[in-house]
Every structure is written in structure tokens, then in C-alpha cells.
Figure 1: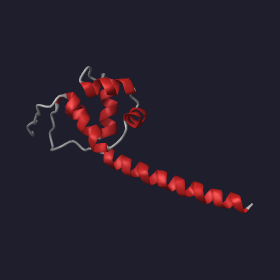
Figure 2 (figure 1 turned 180 degrees about the vertical axis):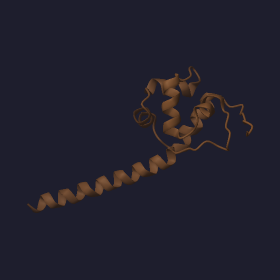
Figure 3 (figure 1 turned 45 degrees about the vertical axis):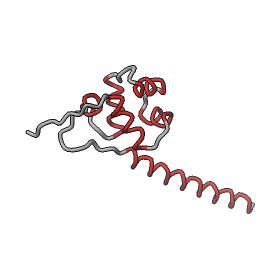
Figure 4 (figure 1 turned 90 degrees about the vertical axis):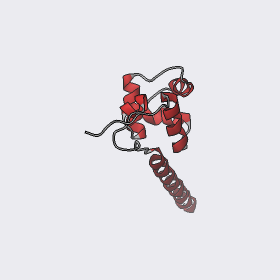
Length: 111
């Protein structure tokens, strides 16, 4: 069994590192992770911790364990941080939609 490693960072520190690494706005995270913007503000400042359900949603969204988010413990290296991947995919999808929109406008103008 592998030994768990622990960090001295607080939940707020770990949460902020995930926010900064993903480059997403708070409103985007709130909508995509299914948590409130007010909660995000409180977590960032260290005023409160997420509930069990919120912790679960955050761990799924960020691609890391609930244990790492809450306690800073990890078993196999650093947590997977999929936010950057999500943002990249969202940017690609947004560009494709914009291209489709331009294409449709071009077709409509022909009629």
C-alpha cells in the first residue's frame, strides 16, 4: 500500500490553485460544476468549506480526489487537473459554433 502524502496547504489554497490553472471565471465554474458563486467566494477566502455534495461536484469537475481537495492528501502523484483540457475543448467548440453561425448567415444572405 502506498503511503499518503500530505501538504500544508489549506482547502482555499488548493482550490485557488485549481481556479488559476484552469483560467476559468467563477461563473463558468459555478455553472459547470453545479455550485453557487457565493460558495466559490467563501471557499476562496477560507470562510467556509464545501458540503459533501459540493466537494463531490468539485472533484468531478476538476478531475481530482475529494480527499486531495479537502485534506491535501494524494496517493499517486499530483491530482489530475482537467480544467485546462475542458477549457481547450470549450474554446474549440465555441470557434466551431462561430464558424457555423457565419456559414449560416452567408447561406441566408444568398436567399
